Amino acid sequence: MSDFTSEILGQLDANRIQAIASQLGLDPAQAQAAITQAVPVVVGGLARNASTESGASALRSALDAHGGADFGTILGSVLGGGGQGGAILGHIFGNRQDQAAQQIGRSSGIGTANAGALLAMLAPLVMGMLGNRAQGQGIDAGGLGSMLGRELQGLGRGAQGGLMGAVFDQDGDGQFGLSDVLKLGSQFFGRR
Image (tube, rainbow, N blue to C red):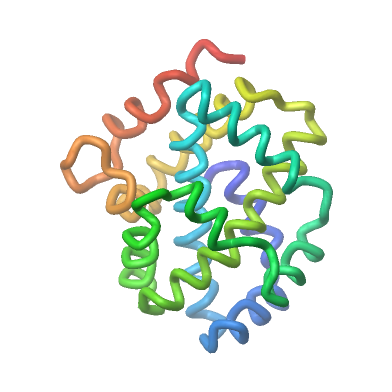
């Protein structure tokens, strides 16, 4: 698993997974399996959006509103009904939002509605962590695009590649493979 994605998943200890599972009415093991599938898809969506200069710039600007809070505070807000998860998902996935929920719901066995709710919970968490990293390390739009491009390459090679292919397949072959990574990430090489 890639660096940033692993960092996010590392923040989701047993107590936090239990809280998410309770919110969704799921067994904690089932919630954890779905989270392990959903986080890379959210990160992959952000990487796809940041694959152009204008997309990376827009994402970097959006992160200013999401950084600064710690993971536990963001999770508490999300579980309390805050966090603007649906709006964030609309920006991340655009017209592929329903497709993302369907694929995660099917592959994890939690169903489309629960997967959509889970994605809405995870989106603010991912944005908050990314915002904190960008602010803490002084990452500009170009650096953000490069970081997410490397993340996308790692995710495409990992176990999540097939699920991401169902959501982000660029060449119509049904897989998220090297050609898709190259199409999504070609602008990152040559950036810092």
